[in-house]
Amino acid sequence: MAPLNGIIQIQGDITKIQTAQAIIDHFGGEDLKAQLVICDGAPDVTGLHDIDEYIQSQLLLAALSITTHVLMPGGNFVAKIFRGKDTSLLYSQLRIFFEKVSIAKPASSRNSSIEAFVVCQNYRCPGGYIPQMINPMIDDVQVIQKATESEVNRTLIPFVVCGDLRGFDSDMSYSLNLDDDSEYTYREVVQKPISPAYKEILEKLKNCSIKHKAITVKHDNEADVEESGK
Image 1 (cartoon, helix red, strand yellow):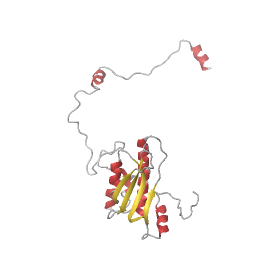
Image 2 (cartoon, rainbow, N blue to C red):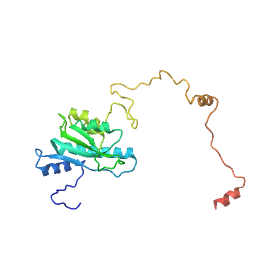
Image 3 (cartoon, helix red, strand yellow):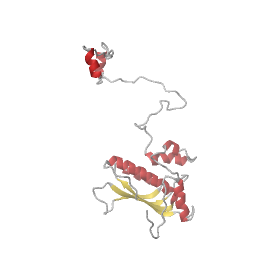
Image 4 (cartoon, rainbow, N blue to C red):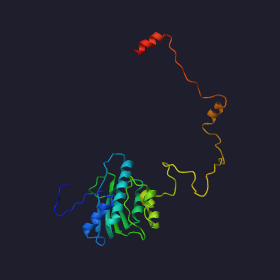
């Protein structure tokens, strides 16, 4: 990027602690941090709103994680978001760190666009929380929450990164031994299906088998086979 008069540019990865430290050093140390953090970053739009919203939320999470390092108490944070069904969840996640959170759609933004801006005011780090750098596309949330000895982090990190984790994720596999103190014991279902869709085929399989022997193809004229092989 070309130099701009009166602007200090720092090139770095927002998921790296070195970038946060470079910004803090510019302001003069831990006691003098930024009063405002603005994030206008956005991924290349695919046109698939669900995918675009998800990727943008991961970018916003990375921006929030570095903001907890460089923003002074009482500071403000403004970032671009893509509106979707999980906007209320995003609001709840940001409210952990800011006293007031608003979602705005400026007049300069096209009505057909799903973009909006979240305005977070009065940064207040939860008591006992230790700021962490989070790369949501790479880091394992279970590893992140145990990276510090803070019980507050272990409670808040899963919610900030993934939302509500009280239930199981249908896209993951879990051990049957949910309790370390006991082994999994299989139990028959209390009530089996009365009329399942596969009942008819099960009845037919009692008297026949769907297994078959290997099929051998024989040619009547071996010469034709040799000729075709040439």
